[in-house]
Image (cartoon, rainbow, N blue to C red; front, side, top):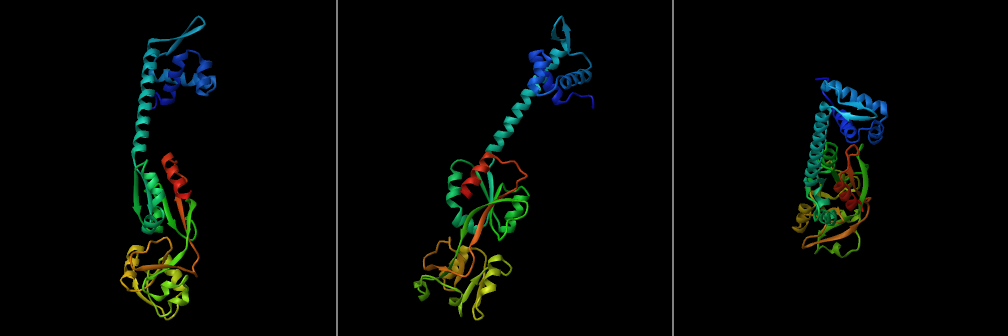
Length: 282
């Protein structure tokens, strides 16, 4: 099995057989003439017959050489067809994006709409940690997440900086104000993310002592629905869209949240992935 011809030998012989000139073939293959001669010699040893001979000043193929050249061209054509087929399948396969529910609902819509008009798109919905893990594991081509520092090992670019708003019932007198702060939460019932989530950690660091946690819940849509029901107020990203009966007023006291698009630099970039990256970061 070790004496079987390899593709480099067959490709080299196919080029040589077209020109029957070692110097010209070596130049086309970007090889030195001795290197090409070695490949052809080893190919002849593998098939067990001389592949060409000299007649006067010309080189001509032997019968074994003619058969080997025909086989080499077939292999080259089949490899080309296979490569083309694989590329076509890759281009038909969807690009996979992983992001959180809030980013998908309120931030990324215009970019995804433009991309999906031209290319198939698959979406995974995960939190920031799950998004980073999906990209690193190759489950998603790109991810959009919000973290204080970019995940190690992933290339990143800023998508947007997002501030915060206080969501409260439209009938609340505070809704008439142009801005809210931590002091406005004193004595209020709050709807917050579960303990340990980054947004909850930031809230806990500033929350007035007499504010009360009414509900712990994940996801902006459900949070806003509970606000609409009068369960409490909530600090949400200012890109959220308020449902009927809810007002959003700017909230100071928290640094803007940075959303970034990430990818694994170890993986080759499909042109479609580059297109989506540009749309998200542009």
